[in-house]
Image (cartoon, rainbow, N blue to C red):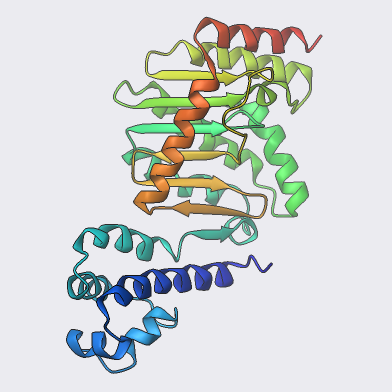
Length: 282
């Protein structure tokens, strides 16, 4: 399967085109007839529906108006706007090193009031110590063979953590217990990281949950994802960063987060799992 950014974008445009075709068909209009009603060239609707021409906001509004489904407009608009940024390969995002990628998220953090974060295997960046972040980033640099700007990137990551101490922002965080047990940087680094996690867990604007390895699963572990307010979701895959802005997809991730949060221990039981992970370091 080709997962390059260009093919992913083209697939997304084709999928949007199919949605527009599905909206048109119940009306009995042909693509040419819809184009005539919209005042377009004869082939424009066909080009849009085949993913060859990206639709503008006005094009989408014409579709939903002519087809009598105005309620679909915002979802279609969000989908169209998100296509070009929906799939960005790490080798493109990190080609000059890690600092730029860290800085790119600062404006998003600044405008977000509610964070919902799920991580199955690592401690999230907002909660990392400098030593833990350094250990992870050094492995990324070595694995992806990119320029080593780890020291600068870690400084940016640490600066982003100021948002944790803003009482007007709220953080819902769910970790799998495996994130506590996966070791980066050696026992001393892990002990300090888990100790730091205990301090963050008692902040009044932070809800920290840990899904025990012994939990009876009603929601399976998935890739780590971050929900920013109700505006977008960022998912980190092995090869790329995926951004979701379509309201229906954001709703799916919000539901997934809620189900994972139900599985998690919070408060004292969560802190007990963290303390057990520290004790296991020996």
